[in-house]
Amino acid sequence: MQSVISLFTTYLPYFVLVLTLLVFIHEFGHYWVARRFGIHAEVFSIGFGPELFGWTDRRGTRWKVSAIPLGGYVKFLGDNDATSTTPSDAPLSDEQKHGAFFSKPLYARAAVVLGGPAANLLFAVVVLTIVFFVSGEPYSPATVAVQVDGPAAKAGLRTGDEIIRLADRKVDRYEDIQGSQFLYWAKPMSVEYRRGGELLHGEIVPQFCERTDRYNNTLRYGELGLDQLVRPVVGGLLPNSPAEAAGLKVGDLLLEIDGKPVGYFSRIPELIGARAGQPVVVKYERDGQSAETTLVPVADKAVDCAGKERVVGRFRVRPVATTQFRSYGVLGAMGAGVNAVWDMTTMFYTSMAQILTATRPVDELGGPIRIAKAAGEASHAGWSGILNLMIALSVVLGVFNLLPVPMLDGGHLAMYLYEAIRGKPLSLKVQEFGLRVGFALVIGMALIATFNDITLLLR
Image (cartoon, rainbow, N blue to C red; front, side):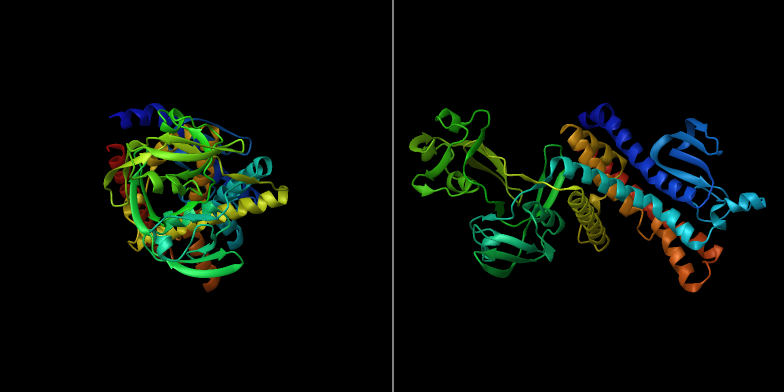
């Protein structure tokens, strides 16, 4: 019940804000390109259904906001309907034919159709370019700490190795490793890594993990047994921290635990995980001076990849921030933005292919409720969270519409490609059949996504 209340009180306003902006950008892409070719737009609508309010501009285009905020459309002169699939049977004057969509050459119609997805992708690139130019691109080195007896250790990797490629994808930063973990769950991953001056190759067989985050979202990923290599410096103290009670302070460098060298931050849980409630001696360095103290790790509950709950010992300390920021000029920031959008695009299509081939469960398809929930969760991170969500959803909206499914922009482009190759368009009968198939596919996906959304909401 609390989830349902949060949907309407917290999530819905952010959902409407984000989706309205992205739909406007998409439809304006169609509209802007159409105007370049002299095509007249009769209606520009944000949302479907009855009109809530609107106005007619001096060119005769009706701009309106409609009651159902789940998309939008531009209806061009001469279209049979808002999908721009077939021409209208209504007679047009010679002057009107000049501004009708279907009177234009093939390349113009294809450009108009491509304009919507292109606008979404361009929006993401522009926003990322600005962010990277002003603030820099978040970057964490791909030098890793290898967990004892984990999948990476079994593959021969050692702490201090630098990952170069993983699952045939170039690794430029540690975040790329995390992306591959969420993309491939149990499929063996080829790995290329550097140890000293030597380039080595291997294969990691990830362990499938399924966990629930603090927002009750299911997270599935392949556990590689890798952590970012971080110095064991106390970066922060959590509430009720036994480390703070024992006199440790932010900035202290942990050297040994019960005589065993710490070396890197993710080594701490390996040394104290089984020592909950048992005193341990910690040697540390502060201001160049070594000292010792005795801590009693507090017992916390943890869930492993198999879903089993166990008790582990923790110091309740945070590592120092390890994210760096790469500075760019305008062209460098633009290149980084293009690369980021390309990575999101390839991840989307890979995920869709996995769903279609049943290697990824269909419950990962989400609809409006899940988007609304994600928007509300992103709002907890402030405007940066909302901005990141807008970028991701803009890319998804663009690349989803490029799928070769009738009713979507990609379906139109597929028909235009056929027309370009054969020199004549598909027959109206075939187009109508394709439209029905596309409608069934889109409605089917929508029903599955809605079912998944409701299931998530009622957890």
